[in-house]
Image 1 (tube, rainbow, N blue to C red):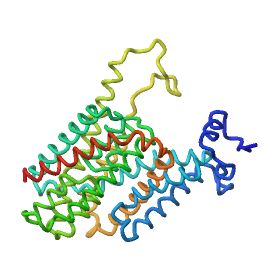
Image 2 (image 1 turned 135 degrees about the vertical axis):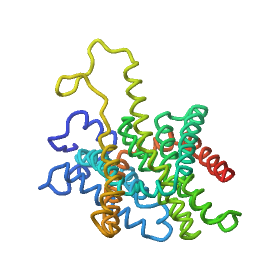
Image 3 (image 1 turned 180 degrees about the horizontal axis):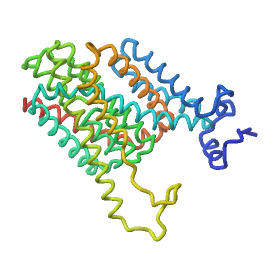
Image 4 (image 1 turned 120 degrees about the vertical axis):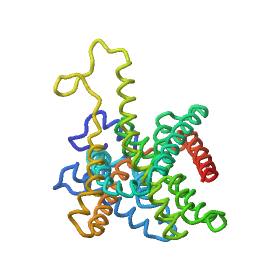
Length: 369
C-alpha cells in the first residue's frame, strides 16, 4: 500500500494515483527543509542542468529556457509528478517568474529607442498588431485551443517566452498552457533564426536592413542575436534596437489585456452570491504590479545607472545572468506541469496558426523594407 506524507489530502491522493507516482518520488530530498524550499531547489537544479546543456554544441540554439522546460517535462513524463514539492514549483513558476520579468526591464534601454527615432517603433506597432490579429484569426479558423492561441499570439508579436510569461498571470492561464506555449515559441523561433542565418549571404539587402528585418520578425531576443550576429556588428546593433521597440510594447499590450479582462468580467451577469476573497470583500481583478516594476527598472537602467556608474555593463551582465536563472527556474516549475499527451493533442492547431503567421510576417516585412 502506498504510504503518503501527512500533508497530502484526499484530492492529492487521486492526483498521485493518476500520475502513478512512487513513494520515493513524493518525499522531499532534504527532510530538514520545508517542502516549499525543496521544490524551489529542485527547480534550481533543473535550471542549472538546462543552462549546462545549452552550452553544448547544437543545443545552444534552443537556449537555456527552452531546454530547462523540456527537461522538466521529460522528468515528469518519465518519473511522475513529485506532488510533495508542488508548493515550491508554484512559487518558482509564479513569484520568481514575476520577479524575473521585473529584472528584465533593465534590458530595455529607452535611450536607444529615442536615438533611433519613431520609424522603428511604428513598424513594431504594425508587427505586433499584425501578429495578434492573424494568429487569433487563423486559430479561430482552424478551431484551435483559444487559450494556447492567445498566448502564442502574444509571444509571436512581442518577445517570445518573456511575453508569454508576462501575460499568463493576466489571463489566469494554467501552468501547462504557459509551458506548452513557451516550448512551441522556442521551437519555431529557433527554426526561423537558423533559416535566416542560412539565407543571409544570398539576400540582396545590406547588413543594417537585414538586422532590422530580423529584429522585427523573430520571436526571442536570443533568436535575433543568433540570426543577426553572423552578418556583422551593424546588423546585430540594428536588430536588437528593432527588437527593443517590440519589447517595449509589452507594457501597453499587457495593460490592454488587463482592460479587456476587466470589461469581460464586468459584462457577465453578477451571481446572487458573489465569490469573496479571504477578507470577505468581493473578488477583484489582480493588478499586475510586476509591470510597474518592469517600467521602473527600465527607467533605472536607462537614466539612473549611467549617472551613478561610469560603466554599468558589469552590473547589467550580472543582472542578466540572475534574470536568466530565475526564468529558468520558472520554466522548470511550468515544465513539471506539462502533460506530453496534452501537448500532442492540443498544440498542433495553435502551432499551425503561429507558423503561418510567422511566415507571412517574415515575407511581408521583407517586402516592405
